[in-house]
Amino acid sequence: MAAKKTQADTENPTMKEVWDTLSAINVNEHTESKMNLTYLSWAWAWKILKDNYPNATYAFTSHRDNEYEQGNIDYMRYPDDSGSVFCTIYIGKHVKESMWLPVMDNRNNAIKDPNARQISDAKMRCLVKCISMLGLGLYIYAGEDLPDENSNASSSSNASSSDSSTASEKAKPKGDPKQEKKAGESSEEVDEEDKVTLVLTEFVKDTETTEDLFKFFRDNREVIDTIEVRNPEEHAKIMKAFASKKKELAAG
Image (cartoon, rainbow, N blue to C red; front, side):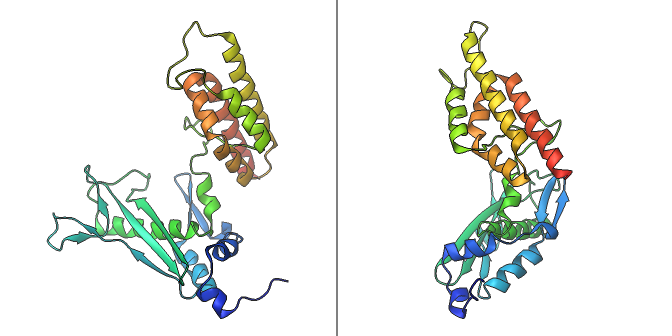
């Protein structure tokens, strides 16, 4: 049975103690989906953080902007008039975590000249993302780039470190990785990419949970991005395998 936390544990925890506590919490019942992305309720996330660490506080960064009479605004303005908000969470003497987030519309596109409501929404989403960096619900963000079926988005992952390193070696470009394959390229290089595709797609089939699939995707990102440049057809096969498995796991 786990030992009950003392007041000292919650007032001045180490980063590891915070991570171990928050990363063990299942947040699935407190999420909602919009535009194929998953969001965690900011009110619930903040409650859980305060339940475990009552002296936790947060602050948003103000930014200098000479266009405004007061001099400071709640977001950093970029040259194209879009912007990002920045949040920092403090717990006791030892824990400080920061995160940023663009001010976005409901399709996750950056907004130019955002209004007060859009900035406010971005700040609360940024707060949740900052809390996730301490461990609570971080796995939600792990699959942000994992493709859906019929999607052309690029991504990657790895099921076992030994097999992934083998795949990485096979996928290494022989020259400039940005140079497209020419008609006279050797069939041996093409065969190697076929083998990498086979290895990756077979491991995708063996993943048993969405979290495993996300990890496999992230671990092999560099390999898959290389294949996208060298052989778009093989890349499409890999991405289709990930998308199909993601749909299968989501269906239960």
